Length: 386
View 1 (spheres, helix red, strand yellow):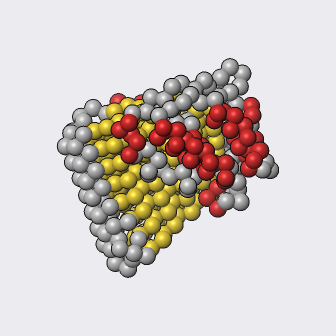
View 2 (cartoon, rainbow, N blue to C red):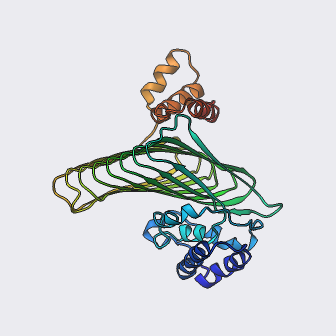
View 3 (cartoon, rainbow, N blue to C red):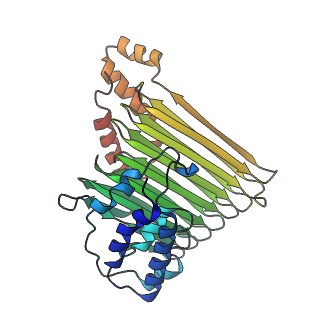
């Protein structure tokens, strides 16, 4: 195992190559790199990373080709938000992303504004010649009080590379946000992503994460609720071959009268592995909280493995909270019924697999995105099984 000093030495070289930035950006970078230097990459001895081994990222750092650093384009207005929600102290990958702040996709929706068309944020990566590239996408979404918008984040690429993404969402009182994240990285890519949403009083936040690509992918989704806030976290992850996907979520009910719903569904085939760790925290003062969490998994292969761990941490007494997880296979009776109607075995498996995912796809309100996802899934599930 590499020592922390060995892990961070290569990144220090990359860090010193960066172009100068505004003093406040430089201070943020330096504090973040100091934090990363102290802790290094997580290992499987860390409970939060028990089932996800990132040694392939840590061990290959010297082989990465770090793109030439552009001049920082971060607007001054972002200063009051950047780094105040996705904290560098909790996650070393957030610290690493912050240490390499250059380009920030900054979305600002003013108070009372209603954006009818979705705001699309697309990040595309690629290998840097013969060596894997390294990318640290940063997205900042600030939505004013009583404003409404829809955000669609997409991640894709070609070749071998490492994407380390951070998204911060700040919602004012009464704001309404529909958030979608679609991850279609290349089969050789590593994808680590953190999303943190801080929600104002009576805000409504709904997020759907669809994870399809990457050799190794880890998604951390964290939401902090205020009084009367309504939050929905949904996710769909589909892995096969030797892919690995890890979803960690935390819904923090910090104030009373909050409502949260969470549904994550996974489809695993081949020798794929997946992790779901969902934590609901209800603080002492968060009375009248109503929270429900569900994780459902469809395992299509005897060699696929899912580790699921729903958690409740409740410090208030007047709450209604439930959680649960299921792991199952395709319904044999449903397969038999479809085949008895003249549908081939593979097509029947494909139809039932798509039906499992459809519950979440049907919740997509952006028709163009829904159409794209349906097409991708139909192609992915075509003649599934065998």
